[in-house]
Length: 221
Image 1 (cartoon, rainbow, N blue to C red):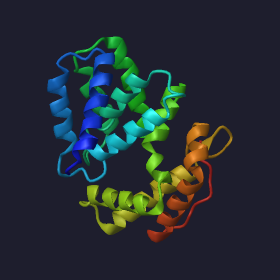
Image 2 (cartoon, rainbow, N blue to C red; image 1 turned 60 degrees about the vertical axis):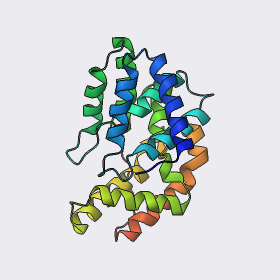
Image 3 (cartoon, one colour; image 1 turned 60 degrees about the horizontal axis):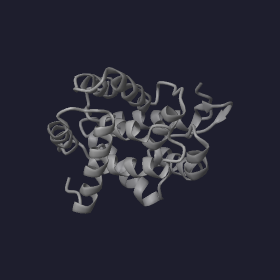
Image 4 (cartoon, helix red, strand yellow; image 1 turned 90 degrees about the horizontal axis):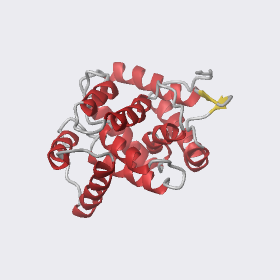
């Protein structure tokens, strides 16, 4: 995947600021390795453009983020390992734990990465924000959401159409029906709920029906 030079400049800026803040040693060497991972050919969505958009969301949320540099670095790290074998968040955390930086910072970053599996319940405000940032694509304009869905299909190209449809319908219905603070909602924070919830629900429901499924009605706690 090619990325425009202006976008790459922004990514380099976010890397420099966040890697310095978390006191990462040999940050230039790590940056090259991280970029090489996000440009792997099997990554159609979980690539540098995903990181770029997440970094922009992080910056736009800066007034509610308590530690923006740690969150920015966690965004860089949250999909550093991504393949069909699964456990990508746990394996990305293992990658972080091998980096040369203070253990305290590794722990903070790891907790932020863990909640992007969307199975772990976020506890802190920053954990809720990064979880919401990771799902912000759900609330994008229909054209961009449909590109996202097509890119996800390409990342699961080894699955049959039937296998993919069944799995994807289950995932989308999970987000449509999970309970947060006593009601169904996709996003934890009011900022993202107000900004994206309505469109996200429309996108997910449309996608479920397009896949030939039914929009389920249950609560996931």
